[in-house]
Image (cartoon, rainbow, N blue to C red; front, top):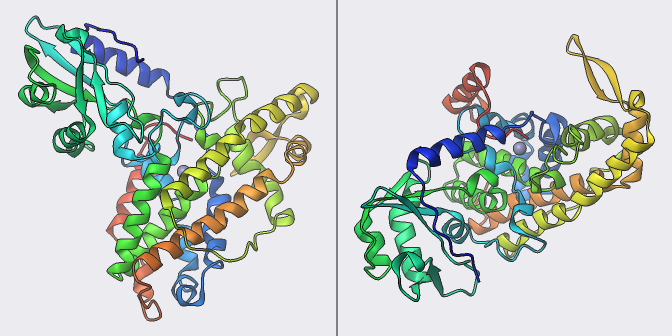
Length: 418
Ligand SMILES: [Zn+2]
């Protein structure tokens, strides 16, 4: 049973509440994998490729390395970028999170919130029942209509959603829907609807695995068209997102340890540890990439594996905080002409050792997965000949690069940093 409730509220109150929520959720800014990690993963992924691809990727390995953090930089130019880097799985119950549809449009249909304003000026929310893979109908909060039950077929709901709601995904503000179409969807119940709208309360909590599927399609298209610049750009970006998916803290709302008094944990795990130990102690020769039969299942597996490590990432650091005196946890280090407080080497080494090979093995798995995604897109595109694709001009900055640099220089990150 899903909860039925009616929540009259005005649009004004609703917007004010949403603004407060957004402000309250804006945390301090840790980095993703750090420059070092992302660059290394994209670079090493090139060497997992078969010779037919290596001929093009090796020529452009420096470009792929340098652009490994473009996706992070894009957070300065659009608010839609930040959620592509994470997914707060723990918002959706317990592993394996059966209430979270693995299909993107199903997830949006389920977690979007549907409202209408009636003749009296009350804003009412329509509550929908959960949409699982095997669901073929969706129940809408029927108390509003004084009827026993208002059930809509999943097919009709999907048609409605794709026609009226989804095209507004990238638009700012409320997504408006026609009252008569909403009433028709619900079997012409008397809604007395003056206006109706939908609010996206889903995307802000992360869309990482859904975005990976979309990126794979884009990269495949770029191969089909043999568009060298787009192949490079989408390769660098999917490399970044896949690397993020391998980081446990990219799969939890407690992404910086901020909910458990462990602030700074994000950069500690994914930047400080690799910077200190990767070059000397990690092995980055990880073998060959392979074809991904079922991209959706593959990307979700990565995210679920990462999530299964969250408890250890938190618990081990917590126990070390209790063991180490505070003045041996954070040290001053001179960087870029200023002193910064950063985890002391002894403290970092203790964390590194107690986690075993966790960071190293997540980096290794990321390298194979990035190479495999590139390889899969190429195979799906019919294995186009890359031997004489592109020339040096391909790697020169174009208008996209220039716009991005401008946004980073003048800007502020939009949405949640990580
Ligand atoms: Zn990222």
